[in-house]
Length: 301
Ligand SMILES: Nc1ncnc2c1ncn2[C@@H]1O[C@H](COP(=O)(O)OP(=O)(O)OP(=O)(O)O)[C@@H](O)[C@H]1O
Ligand SMILES: [Mg+2]
Image 1 (spheres, protein in one colour):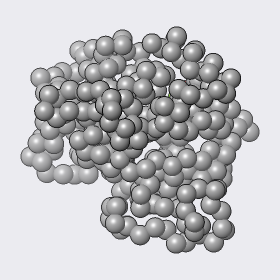
Image 2 (tube, protein in one colour):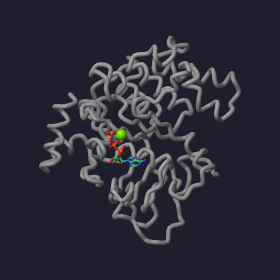
Image 3 (cartoon, protein in one colour):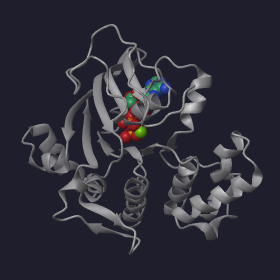
């Protein structure tokens, strides 16, 4: 498999002429500037449609916030990105590779470039923090010294070095999410998939998790999809940047360029019914989106 880097040429193997009205003038998707491309993706389970023609693009360095009610297909989108599920039709490009046609062996290589933070963290209960975080590198049979160095770096990023010997049962919900993030970033992925990283956390702990996601976006320029139930998470990401000097987030008031690193997508009945910036989301007059905005803000402040 060729190296997955930004200098890769775009795909040139398409003959069906579909572009979905997307950005390019030619018919090939722009896999150089886009980390993820969904083209008209359809997927149903036992004849129940879940995704019914979903198209979107994630630019490199961007974080896209995915919103939608329970069961709208948010986790399904993340699983499709990893090739854990295959669509019934449509194309999915991740870092320039069409994951719908890849073999398991090719997907294994790609997955080291794509980290996932699972819903509810999904840590191994019987493994301590060190082994949970190291898991992916152990699978790749890296030398032990390198594994230990990378574990410490990842735990330092999430400010959890002190918990290295603890078991998941000894950690708070917020700490478990941090371990989940450390485990996802240990391969230094180009793309991160966050599944409800603040689900079930109180607002203050949620903000500390969002600050880590922001740090990853602004320091490492990682491309990301972030599923969330908290609209506020998305607005915080869109309106702040990570300041390395103070090691905290700061308001990006008057810095419009920060806003474009975060976009929003709302799923409804198998379709992406909204895609745009935080500002655009705030302005939309569509009755469903207005209701959605009010409902989500009230339920998940
Ligand atoms: N492997 C599967 N087999 C059968 N049905 C599935 C499978 N995975 C997901 N589904 C169904 O697909 C729909 C979308 O599921 P998904 O987990 O993507 O929703 P979600 O938006 O992540 O919801 P939540 O907010 O509750 O996490 C649901 O109706 C779910 O029951
Ligand atoms: Mg889900």
